[in-house]
Image (cartoon, rainbow, N blue to C red; front, side, top):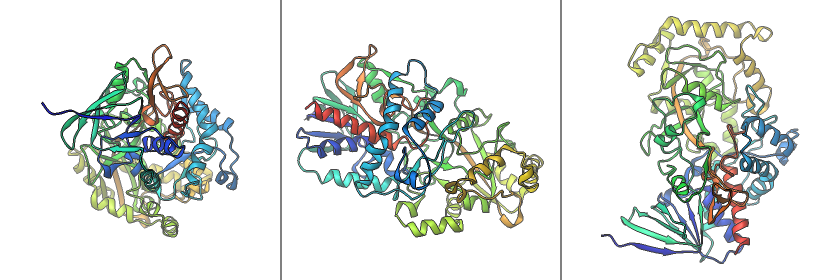
Length: 535
């Protein structure tokens, strides 16, 4: 029998992502004298978790940048927008409390905390999740980290590692069991030995369930029909929800796991790090979003920027697990983006002038890169050739040239009639997007798809991709894990995505976007305040 490695600490943080790192750093910055141990299932190179490769957008309320841009915002307006999108139920007491806490505190507790470290945001507020059938963000609130989330994580990790003495980092340590007496048990994957760690205080910061496609399927929302036959993994396999199950065993509440913030346009990663590894595209707005037969998905045309939850519902409801985005090279060069630091090098490396120049000239380097590395990007000089390549990719002649030609020419003809006669909801929404400067620079001006001057043609096959879990371990405003009767489990806390970004589901049904990185920091700093004061 393998020997058991035993550890002891005062504060155990399970999970080395942005929430866990923020919590440890905040405790040490406050002068915490008790010993802190971070247990992470990944190796030291991946310290920082999913956030380390994230794009880095955050939703703030009434910031200096908003005011400078002429945006009038307030916590009251943000909370109204939040409730519109969340569609909370009557029993959602703690999610509502956390939603109010977010809008009232996120700017001071997250925005100002970040800028106080010398990390900046791009000087243009973006406007996502405007709402489709109900209002979303009434005003632009999406602030993008200069350097992406990777730069923020590097800053946090550097500051954390500069702390002396009271911190231990245990990498490649997977936690399997939680016990009520403050003992966690698991496996050291590097030495292949079991371990146990005893602590007075334990904080779960392990993320959601999005890396476990089986659990995603088990919790699939009923209102979205059956889950697609294939989904891509936009998280990491360690985000498997195992500790959610452990909390249930201890008598804690886990709520709203059927609330998910997936994305509707993913492609397999050209250089996968794990099985089914996917990349999330920011879909081009001037392309047509088509089903597997080359028909425009509707009756409401799909276009990003308004209601991501609706997009995912519609894609999941299709007969086949993939859909197509058909455009030309000009549209792709201007509008195509991929979420994350990896495919946004100018932003990640803080090359502001190059970033601005490439946006202005619609640099096509990303398009060329993806055409070269991804089988799901199809390029052709004619519609007949394009359809042939699309059918070849799926292995069956699902699409006919005549159907595709009808779909595209009808759309192009509506564009050609001019703005006075733009009787198409996608075109109307393109006009709405272009009215805000932050969107205008990334949105073509009523570009026809079959325009020979914008050739060649391009089609992208996409699948639904997992990302964030909106539900999670139920917590009160002290981040304490709650039992069914509402009482806390002594010494056990949850933060970040593991807690549904607060209360087991602070976003409700939909996020206003940008509430995830900031939600992790906000819950972590709140937990640090509570835990430090209890010392």
